[in-house]
Length: 327
Ligand code: BDR
Ligand code: CA
Image 1 (tube, rainbow, N blue to C red):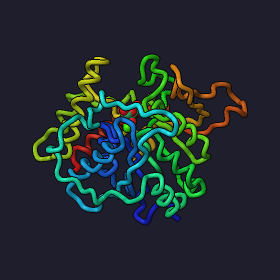
Image 2: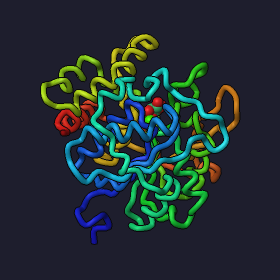
Image 3: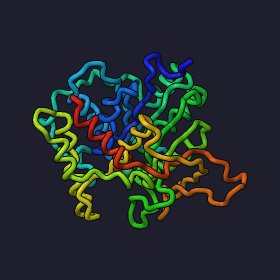
Image 4: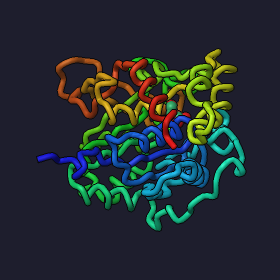
């Protein structure tokens, strides 16, 4: 018997800190017939959760079809650390500062009365063994939900996390030891990895291999009459400006859309089982994801899978094909 939903779709909850690449990830998920998006939960990360929640509603306001998922506002701060944001990268509002007038009126009625950490266990337990949580921000909501309702959350099929920098550089100066999502809430990722729920990490080892250049984005996304793809291009401009100024790269890393894409089509990446430790201490290596390297030792028993290679051309084709045609 098919353990997925009746329609044969994979049931997912998107847990986002809606900045620019989260926006691409949401659009990709909603344009993917393989997925059934049960809810979008929001968290502080790229910007404060008040803004990430508004950003999700802004993105949904551009979509001209019904049946939009429920939105649940989540945690305002990491489990133990103070919030650290990336407004310099994603814009003060998290979506490239296009201004409120850019968007159709927002449907605040989509926002659930329940907070994310309350809704997550409820949705997971409603479909035991079926629901995949795709987290593209700090995993604070997921960790809180696990702390609150471990037995219900244990019924999740999988948690797929954009996070970590394992055999490569992260993106947090000065050492580039850590990746942003893990840096913001290392204690939350530590919790999630200790939960026993199957976890897949999509780290910068693969996401730094998927850069959407400004030229390609302009070519595919700015055709006439498609407000959704136009928005994707417009909101990415500041992000691309930042990358150009800081790294000489005229484009945007598609960290979060790749994470969604691995659920749509797992063959886009290869993964390996590993034991990952998270540095939860303050200091130069805060948020570093360190793999256990000594073979055949019980201390190294895997606690997740991590993505190690990616077919970037096939991924970018999927992303642009789907976002370019979403209405
Ligand atoms: C991650 O950090 C955020 O700025 C992006 O949205 C992505 O989730 C990449 O390190
Ligand atoms: Ca993100």
